[in-house]
Length: 544
Image: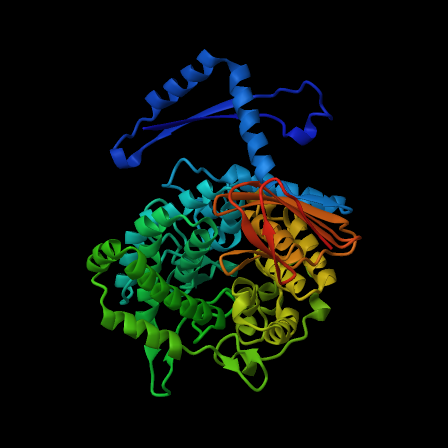
C-alpha cells in the first residue's frame, strides 16, 4: 500500500499580490493494485492522521521546501521578453507538477494532471517531448518514467507477437498494463464510423521509447538503470525493427503499411521519420550489445540468454540498419516523407493561415490524404531528434521544403519547427513558432484547453529554449552550447544536471557573453561555439 500527502498553495509568484494568502489543501492517495488491495481507506486514514499530527504548518513548510528545490533546479530566466518568461515558467510549473519519481508504475498522460482528455493515456509525448526536461533537471523523475516503460515491456512484447513480429512494439496509447488502449474506431461527422489505425500502424513509438532510454543513460551515466532495464528495452525494440523491416528484391529493407507522425496519411510505406528512427534504434541495439559484452560480460551472458539473442541475430540487425530505405534523394538533398509523397497534390497553404479549424476539416479527409498537407512535424521531427545525422545543408533544404506544407493540426508540431529553425539561426521564425505554441494553453488557441493543458507542447517550449536558443546538445560525452538568442532576449539563464554535476549558465545577447559555473560535481569539459573549455568547481567560466 502506498500513501502520499500533497499540500497545495498559491504559487510563489502570487505571494506579493495576495500577502498572507494560505489556501491549503491536503490530499492523500493510497493504491497498490499489484498487491491485490482494493480498499485504500487504511492508507488514506493513516496519511491524513500523519498530516494532523505534524500540523498544517509543517505540511506547508515541506511543500514550500520541495517547490523551492524544484524551482532552483529547473527555473529559466529570460530578460527582455516578459511573455516568453511567463510561458516558460508556466511550462516549468506543470512539468514539475506532473511527474512522480516515487512511483515507477505510472507515467504522464497527454494532459498531465489537469484534465481528462485522452483518459490519462500515455503516448510518445512523454519520451520525446517531456523526458528531456526531466533528464536534465530532475533525473530521478526521468528514471521513474522510463521504469514505467520497462514494467510495461511484456505488454509491448505481446502486441508485437499478436501482429506477427518479434521483440517489443509499445502501445500507441498506454495505461496501467502497457496493453494497447487505442480505440479501434470513433464516430465521425454524421455518425460515420471511422477506423482508428494508430494503435496498429503508428509504430515509431518503440523507437521513441528507445531514444529516451539512450538519452537518459548518456546524460546521467546511470549504469545500474542500463543494466537493469534500459538495455533490455533497447534490445527488444531493435529486435522488433529487424523483424518489421522486410528485405525485398531491390536489395533494401522496407517498412510498409505505417503511420508516421503525420497522421493525415495512413498505411504508407517507408515513412522517413519511422525508418530513420528504426535505423537509429537498430544501431543503438548493436551498441548496447557491444557495450555489455565489453564492460559487463556477466550481465550480457544473463540478458543474452534471457532474450535468446545470438551473434547471427545481431549480424541480421546490422544488415537491416545498413539496407533500410531512407527516402533520401541525393540529387535534390531531400527526404521524401514517405514513398509517393511528392506525387500527391500540391496545395498552397498560405491562404489558409488564418483558419481556426484543422486542415483535414477544411479540405475533407479524402482530399487531405491525397495531398501534400502535413498534420505535424514529420521529417522536421527527424531533423530535430537526430541533428548529428544531418549536415547543415541537408537540414536547411528539408526544413524549408516541408515547413510550408505543415498545417500544425497537432499541438506537438510548432515546438519541433521552432527547435529546428533556432538551430538554423532563423530566430525570427523560431520565436514565432515558440509564441504560437505558448498560446495553445495561455491563450487557449484552438479552444481545447478545457480538457487539460497540452503538457507535451509545454515540454517542447522548454526544449526550444534549451536545445534551440541556448544551443545545448550532447557532445562526445559532455555538453555543448551554440547559442542563438532571438531579438529582444537580452539574456537567458538556467541550470542543468549532467552526470552528477549541476551547471549554472547565463547567455547574454547584447554583449555576446557566455557565463557558466559548476555548482556541484567533478570538473568537466564544456564546448561553447565548438571550442572546448575546462569547467571547475568554484571557478566561473566567462567567454565572449
